[in-house]
Image (cartoon, rainbow, N blue to C red; front, side):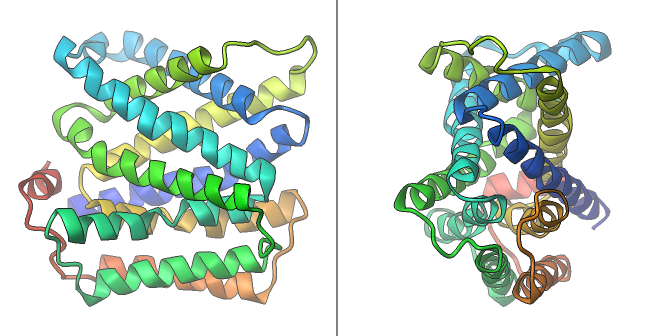
Length: 303
C-alpha cells in the first residue's frame, strides 16, 4: 500500500503540473505559435534537459541495448509524439477544458483494453471510478463553453486520448525494465526527432520573442520533464486504469487555472464535475477489487 500511495501522489503531482501547463500552452498558441512548433520545441528542450541531467547524474541510464531502439521509437512516436501534438492541436481548435476532457477519455479506453485483451476484472469500484471521472470531465467541459466542438476538434481530442492510452499501456514494460529517467528521455528524444522529420521547417524570424522563450522553458520543464517523470514513476506501482483515472484530476486543475489566468468560464456544473473526479480518485484508493491477473500487472505492482 505504501508503494501504491507513492504512485498515486506521483500521478496527482503530474496531473497538477499538466493542468497548469495547459494554460501556458494556450497562451503560446494565442501568440500565433503553431501546434507543430510548440510540440517540436517543447520535446526538443525536454530531451536536451534530460540528456544534460543524466550526463551529470548517471550516464549509465542513457544506455539501452540496440534491440530496444525499435521499442522506444514506437513508444516515443505512437505514444509521446502523437499525444503531444493532438493535445495541443485540440487546444488550438477548442479550449483548455475541452481538450483536456477529450484527452481523458483515455481511462475508459484503457479499461476496455484491460477487459478485452488482458482478461481483467475491473470490479464495481474501479468501473465506477472510470464512469465518475468521465462524467465529471464532461461536466467540466460543458460548463467551460465546450459544448459546440467541431468535428476536427473532437477527432483530434479522441486521437489524443488514444495516444495517451497507448503510451500508458505500451509504456509499462519501459518502466518495468528500465529506470523512469531512461524511459522518459528516449520517449522525448524519438518524439522530438519524429516531428522534426515530419515538419522540418523552422520558424519565421521574431516568431518567438523573449517572453515566448520563458513560456517555452516553463512548458518544457514543469509541463513536460517533471510531470512525465512523475507519471512514469507512478506507472511502476499502479495499473493503467488507476493511473488514467487518477490523472483525470488534470481537467479539474486545468479548468481552475484557465478560469484564473485566461478568463475561461467556470460555473457550478464545473465545480460539480470536479468533485466527481475527486470522488473517483478516492474510490480508486479505497478499492480492493482485483483489476488484472496478467503477469505483467503483477510485475508492475511489486517493482
